[in-house]
Length: 334
Image 1 (cartoon, rainbow, N blue to C red):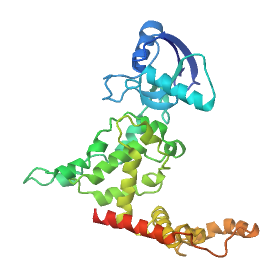
Image 2 (image 1 turned 135 degrees about the vertical axis):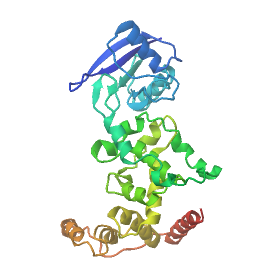
Image 3 (image 1 turned 90 degrees about the vertical axis):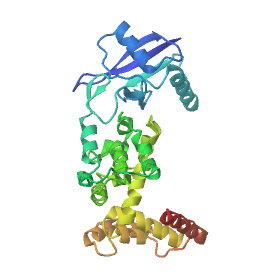
Image 4 (image 1 turned 120 degrees about the vertical axis):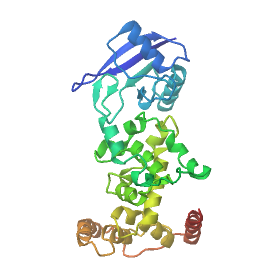
């Protein structure tokens, strides 16, 4: 069958252009197979990265029909089927079989499908993704782990650093300080590793503003595109739980946000937003600047009759409270 490949091509610091390449393909051909043929048979100037062709190295990550994926893993048949399903849901039929290939997002383009991954690697380095040297000052024995301790590292150990999650990260797109899901997934591996001796310092760093775990918007894109099922968002959530276990409510606004939210839901079934603002932003009346920042919003709400003078607990509050307490009890036992 003939498929038209629409490739987003770009030189460094220039506007992207779309170039089309018709190609006779089989449904089982991978996208990387097709790119190789385009380069070998039609246009030798086309630039893209590749290496192993076996979903191991992560080199060939790019955006295929709008989502970041490995070109060596995705094949023509499944991509066409996925695209046709989207078209049927959106009533946008297309008589031509087309596949659009673009460079990864959140990184500047060097040429065509090749991006500059410097920020990707710099942010990985920022989380210190290696066992602390202090823990190595024990000459008497090896660093033994039980099978259970080692199993905590299996999922994050599957990461091949392809950049797909980083490319799709909404938080990274709007916040250049956010280190990214790949770095935080690797960070959890260090937190969970029984051989590491700097867990407290790590949690302090990962808790810092929106650079660390609190910068995540929980959009789930990182999980949905990860070719190795590392589930970066799941690892970020685990780090948050570790931070909440080690920190008090008064430590940071991010921690108060999470803990106060749970407490208010336990108390009333839903959130008393008056208390939420005072406790989270105002830090229980300790943060005068935070309280003053709420004043303009509060005055506007009062002027428009939107400020609630009382709070009524929701139906089923007891059941909600018992569910939360049961979950908290289970976590404490684990």
